[in-house]
Length: 105
Image (cartoon, rainbow, N blue to C red):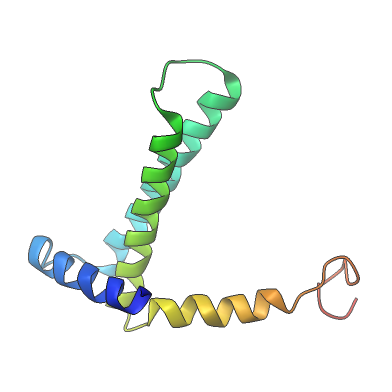
């Protein structure tokens, strides 16, 4: 599923933003993270009417993933493989029994 999505996003990006580059994708991730942070902070503080905070948070997360897929794609990386490889490493960590490093201590 993620491979198909990566292909669709690649085609969309090439059509709409043919001159984009990995740095722009990275900056897009950071911008969307800022938007998510804004929503979460204002909600936690209980100030400002920011509208539907759940929808805004989900939109920011979705946008970050799209930028991440573009970033991986522009670097020749398979997004699904990146996630699977990293998850395999993370899933093998046991922080309860190895609180210093998650693996052996």
